[in-house]
Length: 257
Image (cartoon, rainbow, N blue to C red; front, side, top):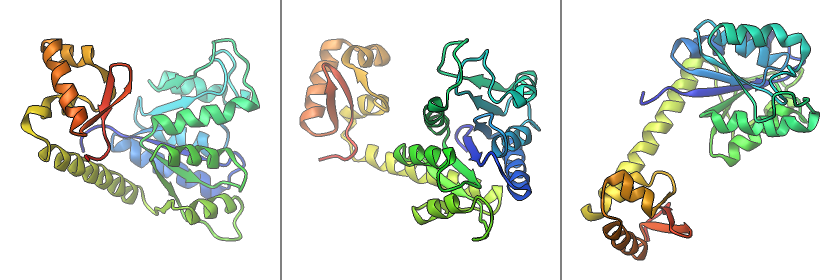
């Protein structure tokens, strides 16, 4: 395992005992394997996930839909305080005193999926915030997992829709971890294969461009003269290894041409 993972666990506020049980079980097991759980401090599945993950100090993150001084829902003020006392993390993109609004929750959900390496949905109705989180996760190329539910079970319609759209069924935390880390291994292998195909003279610049950088930033990072970097960047762009995304800022091309 190359680095610590973050898994989002989200689901219905009006969850069943079944959903609450498995949200807590998955969160607890994942936390024990050094995986951080992120959720939205809501009632139901979110609460169970936060509680389960706090079996290990510092292994939960709560994302708010309002300011830090406007804890929502009020019923979870105790959980807010417990997370902080257990070395967890509370984050928000809103000003400290900003009121929590219903329209903020989709934005909050995009943060949850954006920070997470994958999303586990446990119980969701057809129109639910959890499906919005999963929608963002799919756009962000993150794995989406669901635990199985009965067709006639409460909050099953959203889960079944996610499964029809490509989410994976998991029945144990170990299965989720195995799948998640195997995906990382495959992606790393693809990246290694790409580097093998690149001329040696380009490799150092290609390797640092795992995110977009300006020519100046590349020169500083590699401790090289900017004139040499400019020359090399021009050749790499012509050969199709990198692309100019704005001004003098470059990034790797997804596929060599």
